[in-house]
Length: 363
Image 1: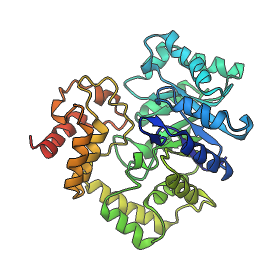
Image 2 (image 1 turned 90 degrees about the horizontal axis):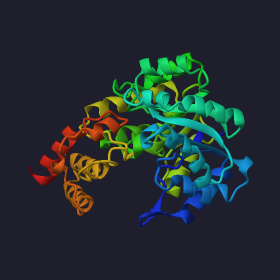
Image 3 (image 1 turned 135 degrees about the horizontal axis):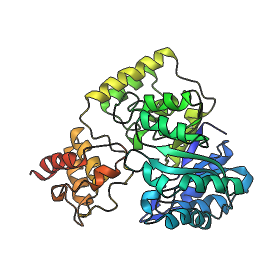
């Protein structure tokens, strides 16, 4: 397996639909370049179906590995949660899943996976051969991770958010979680190595720092190499949205050279710049938007705000108007807390929306 994994969460679109023709080309290039690991999930809109059309229907089953996830929070009952596996198999047509994950465990929801007996269910499905390897993705802290890995030795791997921006962030606890997983001798699948694209387009100071040291290397390549340089990493998932991103990530991981000490010092300087940045560290996962009673397009508003903070006031105003043309102004937030409970970055979303309303609406 190559170090780069293909995350199917942010696939290219044509209008409102996933652009199968472009995804076909990306899948073909990824496989031709030696990649094998594809990652989707029951709750990624249209993603499992796209995997079925562009990957499963077009390539031999033994030529790739496919991961998907069960999400207890998307189910009203134990039966509904367990039925997600059947639906995922129907959507993809894969026959079995090489990797099956309990999705996005954290302090607020891990008990529901126990309540719905999903650990037992997944273990039984592994015994039947419907899934081949069992793991979980995680957005909590190291104490909970240690507890889960102790209580569930059947977990064969863990998927963690790891990137250089979050490495020392106490809310994400990337380093502490990684070290906890390694103490339990669990391989790690890395998600969000480019932090939802934020590290592909970092603040100007970070770009200049990287450009001075390696003029031909993209900011994203630094982020991918940081993640891929860690020991015990099974694969580094990147949610690639076009061929240019795929080619850049493939170039970053081909004949992978781990970061040397000089490059690690550059990364530490980049971390310092990011810590001083006022940008909102949203990864645009969109978990916050489902169930928002006001229909606020939170990721798009935060992206517009970050452009404003970066000196692109006119573009930020245009983006904000486009994002809220159908309603959902930042100022309409009622602070119900739904978004903050769902946010894997543990952001104070309501506070950020109030800040956006002042900056982008003049309120």
